[in-house]
Length: 107
Length: 439
Ligand code: FES
Ligand SMILES: [Fe+2]
Image (cartoon, rainbow over the protein chains, first blue to last red):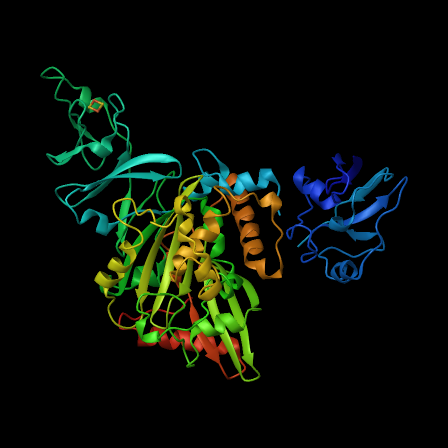
């Protein structure tokens, strides 16, 4: 289990415990974190689970794939160097202190 | 994919739920006029998780009342139709179509009890062979002047059927144009002459290609979704070759209906009306843009699969919808016969009583579903804020809500939008009842 912190649009923080192998997007949807849509359910067809990775204390995030990179070009909010799709960020052992910020909009 | 909380928000429609509150702001289809043609003029109605009785009195007026008798709550749908109203068989209390209590025969002479009792009654309206009722707050909205309401009785036909699953997954079939290439695939085309009253069976406008072949051979459609005044317009393009594009224009009429072409002559306007959270009735009005509809044939065809009085299909979960693996190998994609209504029924009933949308994965071809859920979220928020939701029309707005454009044909001009707009306008101009173009 990995604790992931979401910084919501209103600035508040929500911590969600995500099971190993689940993505940040799934964790957000199943816990009803507002601001992450994940409409497609994680099959890389929608780009509505955009997050900004603010910090990470330990461990490594999976590298960005070509599909993810392409979809990030089409996100509704500004794409920044720390932009990722939540569906590609899997909770893994050793991952600690991941903080992601919800963007202004997903559509 | 959505959270459980969001799924509950969209699917639960009982009294006091957000979506139930939204749907109660609209006229809802509750019965077919044809159901009152037999000897029994009293029907039990269940709508949005509430029980009602609908009857036609001696003067021909429809009355829809709460079903439990206000005396000791016996079921009024077993009542006696007599003396200008509906009489409860338990102790004989009599009610008129407005819910007034006319008699309490067991009470002492001179009793005024019946002046003090009133059964809740709801407004009803008959349109194109369907009885609509309004169970929401305040005055009901105005009816839009859609083709299915504008056409005369001779050019419309209405039918209904029970699907044993939540309303939203049934409606979502109607905003998913890609499924037609698979779920409704037939391995052989049949003679279009034998296609009266059936969908996806004839040829279409401006081509000799059978529609079954277009769907089968061109299975990666380009889908466009446009928000419009009545809800959503979907345009589905199948590129046949360099010179020809098959286009199908369909609609979601918010909150609960879709309008689609059945054949070059006839459109289908279909509501999905929640009985409760786990069942819904589809109500369809078929509208002809050419000659009168052969209602007897249409009704006979449909009663063969949806028998009276329950309109529950003879193929259903209890008999695996008549699934035949040999047929699935040799003749159809699904193996449940040639009636596409059954295919759609299987698709949504097989998802379970309420689809678990925390487990779905939507693709690019599901963009109609995604757009609709956004619209539904927005309108739910509006109602929560006390605002008037989309398509809850004032009498001033209603006349402008016409059409909508629905079309199926093959374009060779290269300007697809112009093609379907002109084709639809021509079909309307030719309609004997003067169908008006969408505003
Ligand atoms: S319960 Fe209906 S009259 Fe008594
Ligand atoms: Fe279908």
